[in-house]
Length: 168
Length: 184
Image 1 (cartoon, rainbow over the protein chains, first blue to last red):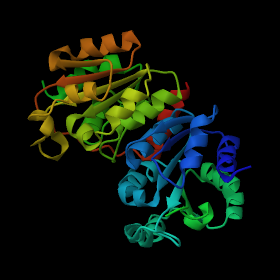
Image 2: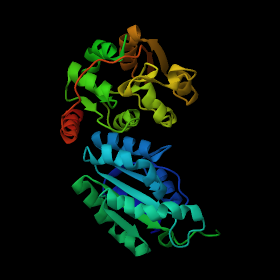
Image 3: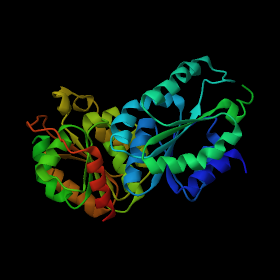
Image 4: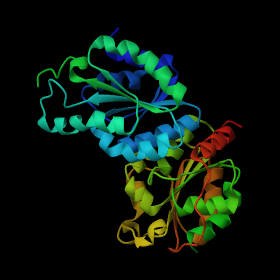
């Protein structure tokens, strides 16, 4: 099974049925799988805080949500994470493309990468870092943990995990 | 009419339905006028009332009304294309458009100047967009609920606020009470 299919299979196995996404080259295969899945309602959002609002509503409506985004979005969503997701104690798995790590070709991506873990740590957001493909074996447990504790949880997936940037 | 007068008038229409209410004075006013389990009060996170309401409407069948403000919609303008392209016929976005940021002291918004949120919503692809004056808000809301078609109502009204206390309910209590009402 491809890693894209495995990730989506873990989401479906954990009853995640409402996923919002912001486009990402590394996560494009996962986003395609989500779009194809009959078990998941896929709603692209224009900005990640908007997506977290959609997820909050979906969860209160009885569906398990997830968001797919890049780590730059941590800079956009701090207020929403603090005053909506955490304040009202809502679960939110965040599958995050961790740009600006080893093998990154775009220097500017490093500027947010160096803040990513510090910000997540400051927010007391449980954070997991997928560096090798086998790290994704924990995804099922991470999803169960997220919906057990009703917290936003970050899953950072770096370029090494995705096998680099291809031609870049 | 000012927002609190409109909310007082439409409270009986809102009452049986799920309501996601915007941060600040709108939530404080609705809380004072008709606090009930079907109201979800936003205590923070300006701009996301419409997004929370849309997610809720897409996840279940009950009618959902998001009460938003012109300033809050402007801060999350990306919400309108998302609404337009993900039709939920149990969803109504009610924008109380008083042309000002009421909760922060009535500073003017661009919606009170050259920008028409009605035209923006239409341009984003929203199919049922209704602009009404304050006195007609109740009628427009009743018609939107009865139509069972996703509707955006832009209710033009005067700016102005009343003095009232902040909401001191715990957010988890608000949310848990609301989720119980959603499932009822």
